[in-house]
Image (cartoon, rainbow, N blue to C red; front, side):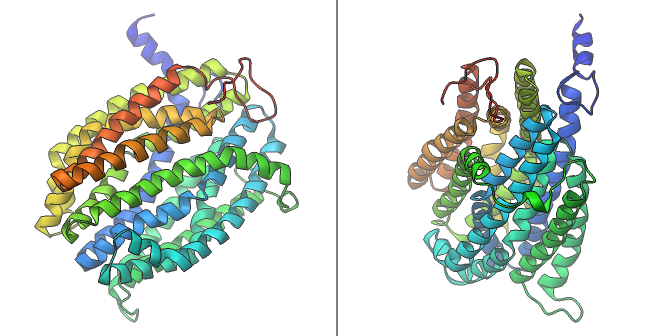
Length: 470
């Protein structure tokens, strides 16, 4: 077969079956709506950053502290949603619809419990955590006010994340995209009204951004749960199956705890990095905050493809198509490396212009642009790590993915940034960020090449090959 014929063959096959036919076409069918959903998700943060950045530099710095803390609170409970998504994927691949519905029902229950606990922790201790990270004065006051409102509504935020994860595991990525779109449109409309106080609405500043987010996510979560209750998209939760099941709780703990550690480590690394950044002037903090928002946007293809890989790998393992699962992971890694390397080049060239969109302060623009120019050349390695870690999670090897993330972010990024910042100033922080991206991609590839992730499922049976303990 010619090279052109091989490329064409990648896109052959139906898009409604993830376990047969070509690889690229169903993966794109999954990933594109996920990318749009993630872009809309980021639009929440970008809209807040844009309006707050034009409101005041102090509020922008407060948001730089607040966003990582929100991520930390959510990440501690995300293990539940990851476990639910992987379990739904494997049971869907095995064509066991009833068990997939049971998993969805139980996941909603355990997610509700997690959100109550995390919301209480966030509300009670967020000011102390922010102070430890270096927030002080007016920045601490505004960041605390924002996060307490978010903590009270974190159940809405978390429920919507679970809704997205469950449908993604089932193979439906379009419905979450549409629900997210409606929520974002409403949020963009509410932000300036509540922040600046248009008409009879009082000026709320950073608190207005928090109220807008909670209100819009609440509506999206309610709509998502309604769809799952009616089962209109295929996956259905049933009240009778939502009574906590101890055995399922143990399973979701085995699968979800490493994912919670992984996401928690990622969030903690962001917060500890903020602690290091907080040692420098407010302009550096604000520039870092804008840079992180842009960074999160440009790596969306990696996150989207990784989510698609997780679903495809899980469904193929459930269907005992282990070779196809492996081909999916390898294809995604190669594709993401190429695409994100190109995106990195574009960001490197346009970094000052990009940051200037969010702030008029020249010192903030300089700091944000420098950060982006350090990390942009390493975007391709982020794609490699995301693809391989998604393969590990789809196979039930959530511990492997967690080890890689903890090692890369904790050992490489934070240690390098902390040590180099003392010598090079903010440049040392940007250097640690870039180095960790490269090491993460190479480490994930090396671990994946061992082949120990193959042949695992979570439905009570092992696949055709024995699975090593990682």
